Image 1 (cartoon, rainbow, N blue to C red):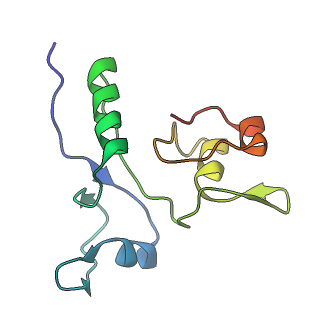
Image 2: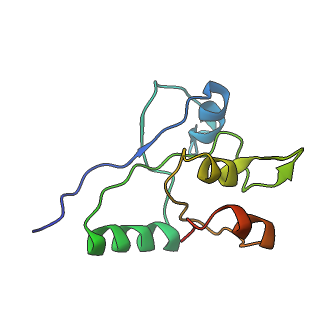
Length: 112
């Protein structure tokens, strides 16, 4: 069975973060166009590897950018960033240049 190709969507619900994330890089004007965006910002080895894994394991995925833009540290007993999304089952996995620290390993194992 040949995997289907579909446009990937970046999802987040924080308007101010969306405005800063989806900047028109050519003119440096910021724009906000709704709740879903076609990914045109994401490229490189991590995306290439994610596409290869998705193709080989036959799954589709949706990308989103973490609202606070952080990888995750523990403050006052709570995690922020990507780590919080993984710990709280908001995200199923993280596919990024994400440092594995001893404190992160204790709470999640969903990082590729």
